[in-house]
Each structure stands twice: as C-alpha cells, then as structure tokens.
Image (cartoon, rainbow, N blue to C red; front, top):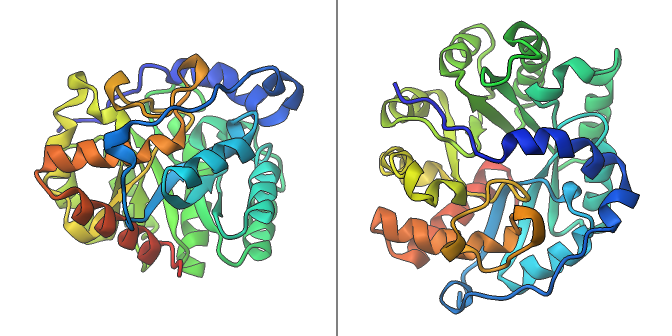
Length: 306
C-alpha cells in the first residue's frame, strides 16, 4: 500500500513554524515582491476558485496575500490553525475578512505535546465564537518520532468526537498513518458529513477504502512534481463529488513552471491555485472549467458555505 510522501521542505517548516505564528517582528522583516501572473492560469472568466486548505496566519502580511488571491480569482479559503498559539491569528483573519476567510481550529499532531491543560475547552470556545468554523488541522503522523502516536491519539480522538457531535467539517492530516487512522475510525466514527483528507498522498486502494467512510480528498500542487507523479493515479480514482483543491500555503510549493505568484524562501503563494487547477485538469484529462467548478462546489458543500 502506498503511503503518503513527505514533502521535502517540512523539516524546515518545523523549525520556522513557531516564529511565523508568534513573532510578528521576525516576519515583518521578510519582504514580499510584487506577484507576477501566469497568463494561461489567470484567465478564468467567470470561474470561481476556492482554496480548501491553507495557513494564511504564517505569512508576514496576510492582507497583501489575500489581495493577490482575489486578483487571481480566488473568492475564499479555509484557514487552518494548528495549535493554541496560532488560533488567535486565525480568528483575527476571520474577523478582518469575514467574507473571505473561513476559520478552522485544530491541534496538529506535531504540536500535541505542547497543549495546555485547557486546550479542548479553548477549542470549544473558538468553535462557539465562529458559527462557520470547522475543526482542523488535526490527525496522525508516523513520519515524526515525537510526539509519538499514543500522544497524538490523545488529542486527535477528542477532536474527532467534537466534530462528530457537532457534525462539523474536519480537516485531517494523515502521514504514514493510514492503518492507525482506519483503526481510529472504528473507535470514533467520523462526522456524518464526512471528513477531508488534505494534501492526500495515498494510493488508489486507499481511496477505495476511505470513500465509503465519508472521505473527501484535496489536491495540492506539490504532487505535480514529476517525482510525485504516482500520487496522480489516486486522484484519477477519486469520485468527482469528493475532489477539492488546496494550496497548503505557504507550504507544498508546486514545480517552478506552475508557480504564477513567486515568493521568497520557497514559500507557496495561495494565488498559485489557478495554475495548480489548470495542471491537474490536464493530468486528469478533464476540462479545466469543469474541474474548477466541481471542486469549488464540492468545497462549499462540504464546509456548508453559501
């Protein structure tokens, strides 16, 4: 069974994640150049793009990033928190951009060991505060050694229960942990509305196993790298009504020829979504307009957005 492939830049992300979330003086020193556009990817006409998963709170100037997204034809996004330390930033973005940013609050497996004693109560309070919020990013990850899987489960299980009891959308990170994830669903079933496997990098066989359980699958541009081409086989088996598009920005940078909005430091601009959609449509041999429209409708339906 093919496991999820680890993005090459993630070890670096683990070192930089805390400053991006907590030290505005650090991020303010980074300069963002004027974005350039890829003509073939930005002529969208009346098509509407929606980014199903990103982390805008990690950018030094999220407002500038959002402006670039809107210019590129993106009408909204799901911004995922990963720990108690960045939930306030996600909330601030949602308050400042209520028609564009749809917040998700979750405790990522990498940060399970950094939780406070009141983390679950705090999570409840954010979900109460934002009526259109979802749960995420949370999940299981066996690529990292610490925190171990047992500790990850200590925080993943309550989040899964919370999403099921409220029937909220939940965005799941699963890396080299498909067996434990399936076992977890036997103990704690996912919400009736299903669940989103973001940046899904599993096999066609896993798509077959997970779809009846309510899985949705979001594609990120990182899998357009030639060395990741086998992952596209899985997306060819994803039902049309379960496919979503995401950037996972500022991570999961697509190949250079796909990048329409370059940023320094190998950061991924979410406005690259149009180029990503165009390339995926070509690989799946689907009309670009049809794929974009279907993915946008799927995202809005899953996250219950008008």
